[in-house]
Amino acid sequence: MNLITADYIYTPEGFAENRTVAYSGKIEAIDTLQALTEKYPDADIHYAGKNSVLYPGFINTHVHLEFSANSTTLKYGTFMSWLDSVVENRNDLIHMCDNALMLNKIEEMLHSGITTFGAISSFGAELEACMKAPQRVVFFNELIGSNAAYVDALYNDFLERVKASQACTPEDRITPAIAIHSPYSVHPVILQRAVQVAKQNNLPLSAHFLESQDEREWLEDGNGGFKAFFEKYFNTSTPLTTIDEFMHAFDTYPAHFTHCVQANEEELAYLASKGHSIAHCPRSNRLLGCGRLAIEQLRTLQMPFTVATDGLSSNWSLNIFDELRAALMMHHAEPLNQLSQLLIQSVTSDAAKILGINTGSIEAGRESDFAVITLPDAPSSLEDIALQTILHTQKASEVYIGGEKVR
Ligand code: MCF
Ligand code: FE
Image (cartoon, rainbow, N blue to C red):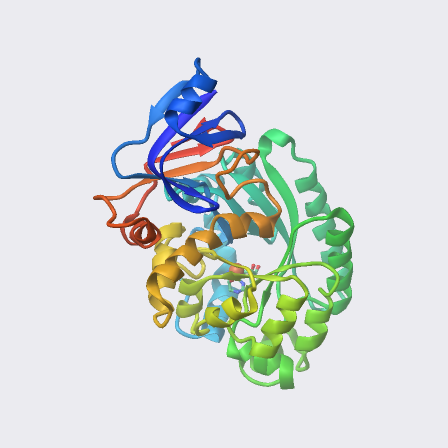
């Protein structure tokens, strides 16, 4: 048994002082140091230091590791210019992205206290690096393809990748999962099939949805930037689905929708009513010219959301604190302390619930995934800790996964 004491502990009831956590692979108890040393006299005892805050390990639900080689190549500013630059540079970027580079970015996530991430994989090339990662990985096999002539081949390749991720052992800490790329890029027939596979196997399911104004225009009336894009690359000029059809394909199984910046109130309410959640990527949205997700509407709808980094294809770091700071600044009209607490919740307990994993909160029975952060000075009140953590943290000072110290 191990005992860890921090000056503050983030519990489901809020921040607590003078508490110790007893854990092995899983969390055993939370109590005073005295009570726990009496209960576990042989335990190893560790104090995380002055101004330390013990959090459950952070969860980044949406990242594309295969684009880790991008820094200055892709074009930012508008979604369509970004997409053109992806088409132009994708092969080169993917070639430059080897296991060593992906593992380096995985470590960057670990340094910021991320103990679980959701990896969106188009080819399965990330699987080896994700198996080697110390973190838990929800491995989202991506389905993409809209040309009817090729969809069967693409779908079969997708199924093979799903199987490969299902064949991982418990030591790999991989949860197989399914990602539908988007309504504009996936044929409705294979979309339906993939949702069924997710449902039958109880796999986490996600999809990029209503990210840009161009996506909306294309799905609504076959116009906007996507028209020229599809004419140029795919020799077609009509969308294969509508916003409503796409949403209805997910009616019977909850999904984690990425972006939804351009979803209107009615659509958000509909998604919320079906038990769906949102991955919010504020820096990606800003860089690709997509706008701001109305998180105040999510709050009203009590719709769960996570804050996630997206890939280095639309970001400059995979540090979860960089992302939380961006969210804090982007949603400038929200009450500051309340928003900070909601943001911390979005990368811990809400993210775990959405991905269906037994982490994300410090309570007995959960996996022992922790991130210790150290504030530069004592917080003036318990209510300020979430805000001060987001403002001042670059790196976690200690990280634990399944009770093992990994940093
Ligand atoms: O989330 C961002 C922006 N929206 C859509 N797709 C991606 C993002 N970052 C990477 N992608 C990938 C996507 O997984 O881009 C590829 C897909 O495989 C090409 S199509 C945009
Ligand atoms: Fe993405």
